[in-house]
Length: 440
Length: 128
Image 1 (tube, rainbow over the protein chains, first blue to last red):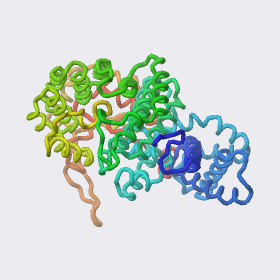
Image 2: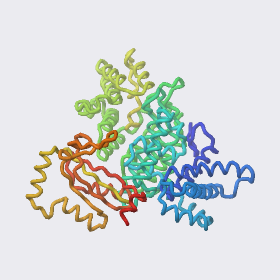
Image 3: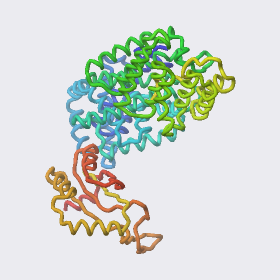
Image 4: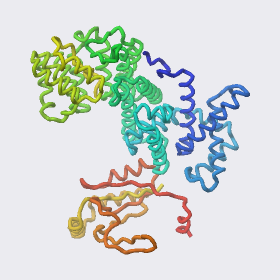
């Protein structure tokens, strides 16, 4: 279950390497052409050429450079062939580009490899631009940064492939025509704002994989792995950004529990009952180390706080032996940085464990009264958990029932029904849904 | 790259009229829009700007079949009305959005940011 350095379940390291190379070529061309479609087309042609030439002459010493320069020439050729009818590339840019590529391919090659880090970041920032709809940012990032195919993305998000392809076409056109640049924003304020959008996209992919909102299986490993891969890339490219490190740490620490989160028959196992020996110690070690790096930067934020909470869970020998007072404090800090009723739900569970169920119910009361989360399943699951712990089984059962009515995920819903609603169990082992630390 | 920042408002014709009257009477030389316009001009990015009459007074010419028909009213009756625009020449969408964010707008107003195309044949006629 370990994500491993390649981090891609169900595909080989070679495929991953292939996709990395493809992503690098697209990033390099997109930045110089300002056009994702043209970059994609040229990359496709370069890879097709490689499959012929490399089979015949062997793999060149610098395959990445070969692919990039070849793709570059293909883009220039395409521009020439299209002549004046080509409208997708600024003619001025292409003029200078064509001259460079044709007269000094060697210089172009060195230049391209040196700035690869910037190219990749520029591509990430363009794909995650706030002027694009959130689902479009996710699709663009998975397609062009992670290198998934349109079919794979469509399957992951359960949308028809044609629909997704259409969205990507429109998004590429918007990037080109509206002047979204493939660059890293230079103004500090703008960089912070745009980075926030990048992290949100990565975390959205992770959460879609970790607690899928659609479909019947609880965890979709492929999406978790893609998100972690993206998180590693972002952390590598922006090592000084504490929140990006925090995000990576958070994902690694959550992913470490994957194998224990589902029973053999696919049913979700609450945190309290998970077999902690099945947690991935390599991921925990990596996540904790990345979190330590982040904390040293002394620039706290929501991802680091959540990662710290996950790290405390990972370090605990059992559910009961967890440092709940510390977790409750971290949730309070999180509520200050990023106030939301969802955080309050999680804090209520932690306070309930640290100071007793009545204290937890007191935290939950305003959330329940506000009605803001009336349709949020984990709220009712937490309510049921705390009521049960306080000895009020009758009302707890009502809360569990409400939880089953509001949860989207079929596997979690069925498990709650089985446990708490149909036959009332004698003992309440934990919050039922593992929401105490996975949400929001 | 040129960007049109289109200013939409939910004011109806009467409300808009009242706002315009008040604006003219104030003969404000240092109001928020005056400052904004001056800042854009001083930054050297302002190409042009216009404030329009309410679309309640618009006249539309519809090309239907073989006929060109004049009708009273805007192209489309909507709750939000296009009341004016600024035309900026800036590097990218982020910069255009920054100028949009700086506008002293009121709640209920919407700024639509649209990039302008360049290099089209008809545009050469402008340079002749």
